[in-house]
Image 1 (tube, rainbow, N blue to C red):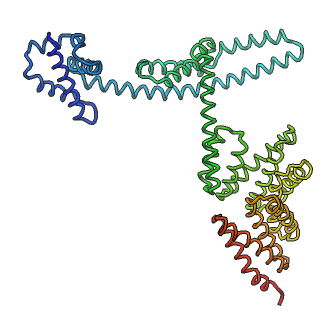
Image 2 (tube, helix red, strand yellow; image 1 turned 180 degrees about the horizontal axis):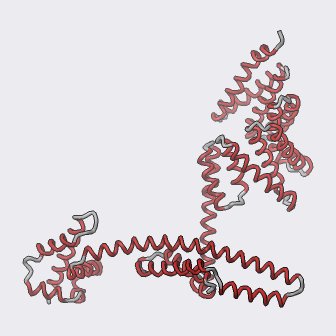
Image 3 (cartoon, rainbow, N blue to C red; image 1 turned 120 degrees about the horizontal axis):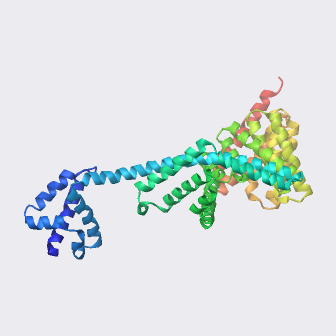
Length: 474
């Protein structure tokens, strides 16, 4: 038969297939396809039609491009059997079945892995028994008993574990039957092999399990995962720091919670999370985080000798003190500030950690506030005196301009305490100096986010004389 006839038929089949597909949102086009063929081939001689239907696709290889040929083959087979709808629906169903099987065997594999973990814990217990026997000098006898016990355990693996292993293997088989290997991604293939390996481990077929996942593959997956974790941590830390600086507490919290999920022991993330929670008004949650930090850091510093974490321990006490003060637990807060000040005073004055001087000033300021809450105004002033002295030296003598805000707020706090003790002129002097600093920061340095603090100090300055007059005896 001439190639031109095959080409005309192939083109007609393709057009029919396209037209049929375009007429339905869901691929159900048997009747449409047949009708389209009938209209397109009404003029085709019967002998040509019969010859084409009875021939094989090989006859038109030279007349069609590879893409045309592939499409033609699908259309040709479907037209010949009049089963387009069945074939397409079967393909769709296979994909859906494949996805369900993947979900199913992932679930089974997770359950099975938990059971294997339980078995592994039993193995650890056996190993501990062996170690104890060795320490008593029974190396050989202990080794024999260990081997025998392990063999018995393998023989009587719990029936539910074996049943899960069988179900997992069957699920993998169903998926492999439903979805051809050419349609599976590398990730799908790995999941299948991991599932088979998990089932093999459950049955104590350890050599078989290793056959499914190579050592090189394990190392490569680890390196890839580690690189991804590093990037994810870096991205979320940079974004989290920026959002924290913008005081967008909820979004910053989300970033650092992601970091903590990847690195559960990341101290920096844990500190920021606690601060975000406190800033969001979730003070009890913040306190729980700070409790955990204090406990862990106390153990690391005092029991394990991790001296480099001493300032972190001081920070944990300082932050917990702030949370406790917010909850009205003033005496407990002061106890925390006492601990933080003791640690930081030693680090700064005895160990020469001059870079921690501002942290020490901050904690004195915080303790001063807590003491003022309890009406201990003279003690509060003593703390504010120390904070102001440190901040003044750092700002004026060492050029630490970024601490000017802290210096101004410490002066405002001392002004309030002095006013409560009737030291009116000294209080006014503190307010005036704080206002001068804030005015320069806002109007000259452009730190407009401090405008609210400037307004606060001005308000304290304005109402102070009225409040004091009202408090004087008549």
